[in-house]
Image (tube, rainbow, N blue to C red):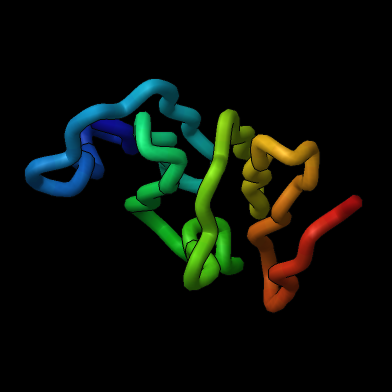
Amino acid sequence: MWGTEGVGIPPPTGLANVVAVVAGYSQFSLAVKSDGTVVGWGANLYGEITIPTGLANVTAAAAGVYHSLALKSDGRVVVLCYTMLFALE
């Protein structure tokens, strides 16, 4: 569980086949699954866990204060943050 002052934010029920987990400062987490998809949970104040439709082939993730990053197998980085969902090439 992730949270502050004894208030935890549990992962989604049934979450399985996870190969990596990252936790963001503003009480959110992301899990990268073995099939290359990403699951997010917790606070979504700035779009940190708004997963774009069709996001796949993710090999790693990172989380900051108000943003998340997903590294795809082709080397592109998908940024999840305040009203900006885009890929860096």
